[in-house]
Image (tube, rainbow over all chains, first blue to last red):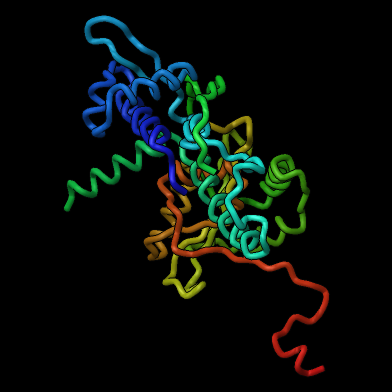
Amino acid sequence: MKLQKNTRLALYSVLEFATEPTRHISAAEIADKYGVSPHHLAKVLSELARAGLVESVRGVGGGYRFAGNARRLTLMDVIEMFEEFAAPEADRREPGERTPVGKALGAVLSEIDEIAKATFRSITLATMLRLLERQQRARAAR
Amino acid sequence: MTVTKAGRPASPRHRAGARQEPAAAVIRPVRRADLDPIVTLDARVTGLEKRDYWESLYRRYGAAMRAERQFLVADAGGRVVGFVIGEVRDWEFGAPPCGWVFAIDVDPQARLGGIGTRLLEAICAGFRSAGVSKVRTMLSRDNNLVLSFFRSQGMMTGPFIPLELDLDAGDRRPDAGAAR
């Protein structure tokens, strides 16, 4: 499964905000950390704000702050905001998809997608933050 | 599958909310008298009453419990609010001995209070004392509630892939056609 750039930016952002939920973090800070354009990131952040997952704070020291529930919000909840999982319309089907070989290949790809979706649905931001902590501890112990 | 679309508002459950306080519960080995509430809890959660199954589990895991085979309950003031069952299996699927958790549940009214975590910690402590250093489980990928719980405890996808096959009524042995 390949995620769109906006989806990855949204995931990076919500995880950054959820790591320090009381701090206001500027879009520029996140853009700099992940090497992306602040203008591009601003569009993603405005979608997250519209969904109520972050809130913007104006003025000196302003930026964005996490407004979600890290124990409830899953990776899939964020991904679904930016990706379409429904079956494609007839005019967007890949060539050969309706052939017997195409259908058999489609069954295998669906199998992989279903596992990926179940994985994204089962991982909350809180779980991701714990995973990050464990990885950081393991790196520090080396 | 990956077509960009406009952002969709997240539901209110994703927004910040109050966390429930942990319930006071004791984790202890199952007793014969616990079976009725366990059968009731399982039936409430799964929609199926399986008394014979639970009686059988009690005989195998509860009555003669040791570190390799555990059947534990969470007891909150004399009320069973959760249970966990597991055992150490040697060389199953070719893997070195490890602990398997094959049932865990918490009363829906007592969830989000850390009881599931304590049940899992208790059974893992038993597995450690039995000399194993890994715990595994397997569940339906549709079971998001329990999948999320195990994920929150740090469990990751293991090295095995479950496979299955619908068996036809006819003989499907590779040599069955040649014999005819």
